[in-house]
Length: 157
Image (tube, rainbow, N blue to C red; front, side, top):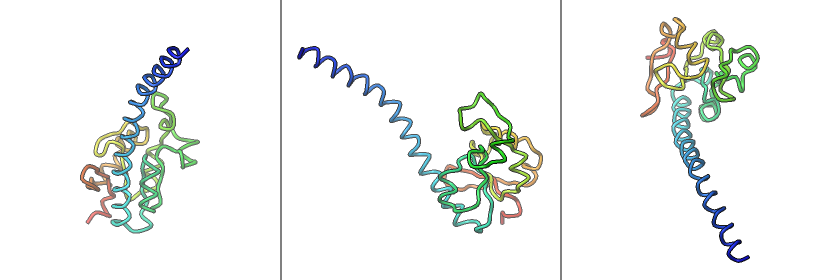
């Protein structure tokens, strides 16, 4: 009985520690993202007027720290995109919906694309990138050491 309990306990510990490795890696990734997105949110708050509209797929941390009105390009906090946006079911749940035309029609002052200055994987990112209004009306701007955003040209000095 003692040997059985010893082996069962240690086997469970081995499995649990193997399970913890990807969980820890995922959590560390979130910590890095949190720090970077917090820095972007604070940069936005300190750089733009309080009524400057921001469009972002990372619509949790950035709006919280920026305190600026934000269009959630994934539709989680945007009824119009959630109900009427196009879907790409190859993307992870919660990241499948978007509407680049809706975002651009709302004329955000700043657009935070998921991959910076190249088309991102999300529906809104791809549609915005392909829309001629985006290249005509927006210019890249370095927000932090490693993050670029696209700012409406009339806001860039």
